[in-house]
Structures are given as C-alpha cells and as structure tokens.
Image (cartoon, rainbow, N blue to C red; front, side, top):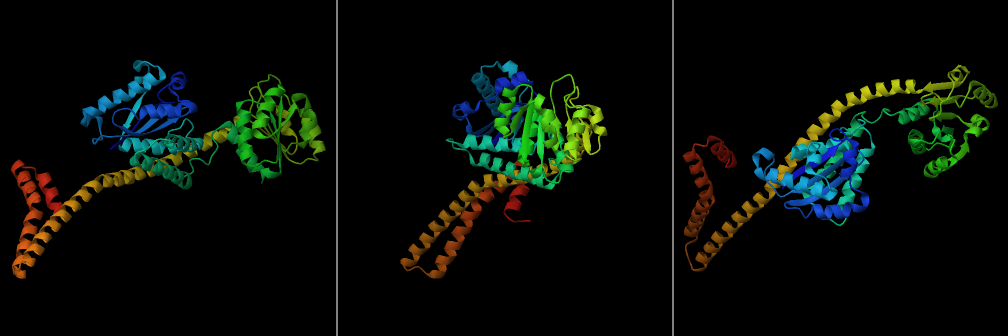
Length: 428
C-alpha cells in the first residue's frame, strides 16, 4: 500500500485554472465514488479550496518512488486523465500545473498543508478546519484505507502541535486581522465596547467576523447602500445605518474601522470633535484602512482620539510576517520529525502481516512435531528417545529455510543480504 497526493495550488496554477479544477460540495460524493473505482485506488480524500485542489490517495502498490516502478507512471497518467475527464479539461491544460507526491513526501505535504506552512498566507488557521472537513466529507459513505486515515489523523495532531509550540499563527498578517489585533491591544476587553464599521466590502466583513469571534458587545455597520449592509449585518449580527447617520452615531462608538471606496473623507475633524465632547473625552480608536482615506488626518490630533492608517497596519503586518517566518523554521522541523516517526510506524505496520505469517508457520510446525511425539508415546516408545527425536526434527525444520537463504546469499556474493540474515538470526 502506497500513500500519494496529486493536485494544484496557488503556487502552481492561476485562479482561472483552479476554478475549473475545484470540486463543488454537492458533487463530492459522486466524485469520490468515481475516484475509488479507478484501478489500484483503495481510499481517497478530496481537498478543494479557493487556493488548492488535491487528491490524497491510498493505492495498492509496494514501491515508493516513480523511478523505481514503471507502474507509477501508468497510475499517474490514469489519475490525470480521470481528473481531466471529470472537469472536462485537456491534459495539456493541467499537466504543467500538477504536482505528485509519494510516500513520505505525500505525508510531509499533508502535514505542511494542515499546519498552514503551504498556505497563501503563511500560518493562516482556516486551512486546518478545511482539511478536517474534507476528511470527514470523504469518509461519509466511503470505506477508507487504514493508512490513509492514520495519515490524516497524524496530520491533525501535527498541526495542533505546530500551533501550540510555535508562534506561526499568533501574529496578524492581514489588514483585517491587524485592525482587530490593534483594537484588542488598546481595549482590555472587547466584550464592553461598541464598534462602528464604515463600509460593507470584503475587508469589513473579515473585520466583523474577527470581532464577533472576540465577542464584541455591539456592531454597527454604516454603508451607502443599505441593502448590502443588511446582508452583511444578517451574517454577523449587526445594526445598520446610512452614511448620513454617522455624525449622530459616532459618539456611541468606542472603535471605528472604515474601509470604503469613496474619494472623499467621511469622518472629518469637526465631526470627531463633536463626538469626543459627547463622550467626555473617553478614548476612541479610529482605524482607516481605506485608500483614499475615509478619515481626515487631523482627527489624530484630537486628544484621546487614536487614529491609525493602512500604512500603520502594514508596518505591524510586516513585523508579524517576519515573526511568522521565524516560527515557520521551527514548524518545519516539527513536521520533518513527525513525518519520520509516522513513516517508521507505517513501515512497522507493513511487517505485521509477515510476522503473523511467520508465527503461524512456526506454530503449525510445532503442532505437527508435537502430534508425532504424542503418537509415539501412546504406542509405548521410550520417552527419552521421543524427546531426542522431537528436538532433532524441530531444529532441522526451523533452520531449513534460513540455511537455504544463507547458502544462496553466499553463492551470490551478496554480502549485504548475508549480514541482514545474520542479524535476523541473532548471530552477531
């Protein structure tokens, strides 16, 4: 049994191709059923996200390197053909973007993916949940090979260890996450603050989701198009106002995060001064992540009004990315060691059947000689003669096969095999 991974990702393929190779959730069962019907495929998991589509498979093969086994090339071609036929693609469109991982390389790749080491944003935490969901979805109604299941369970534990023992996911590396991190640094608890979000685009949605994870007291979304704001508000549990209502609402907000596509400032110094007066100079954090800016720069001159721009956040992001890169070195070492441990366990599993057969053979041999001895005793044979005959027969039968192997290795001049046999027999 061999483990392998085949796929494309953001490093090897443009988004136009990734979109064509992606598997829709409602077609996953059908795709898996078709995949598991392919020759030699014993088990499979399909991982399909916006940045990657990968097939993780357990196949009925013994060799672990494509150059060592021509059958690998045949299997590779069959799987590429299946993937292309399923998505109605030409192999030429896909072949240059595909990567192929076998054995320990497949195990290491999955561990790196689950740990966020292979992500577009280094260390991003969402990928582990996506890998877990892919595994759970692929198990539904499909029998999985034991090695494949153990590989995924091991990858989950490795990802957890990487998160626990390194700082790879603890620092903000997106504008949205950096804005929320800044808010948490200034306010001891977000559970008591009101946040005004200006805009309803993708960045503001990410900010809103981060804030909800930290149980912010109240969210207000201000946007020019109320319908779009309401759709976002329904997803994150927020109140909706128009841009014209910001002046009246500003004093209630402890944190203002703004990201619109407007060309003129929405919050001016005079508006902010009125709000601070009503707040009796309680601190207010304003984060302007719009370009052009949504908040006039002079707002930052007002006492207790702390204004940060996208450039300020970028400095935080660059510093944190450097820290993640440093943490990634330690994470890679963890993955390397865990992969070695898993492959050692897997090779040990491959020996289980051989050990079972060897023990069964020895037990059959023992039972046969024992039966002969008991029969001789029942006929009145001398017990000492029976014991001598039994031990003689047992010795000859046990050493027969190893003796032939030793003689053959000596005749072939195979010193390495001869040494392995000596070690196996406990002769050194």
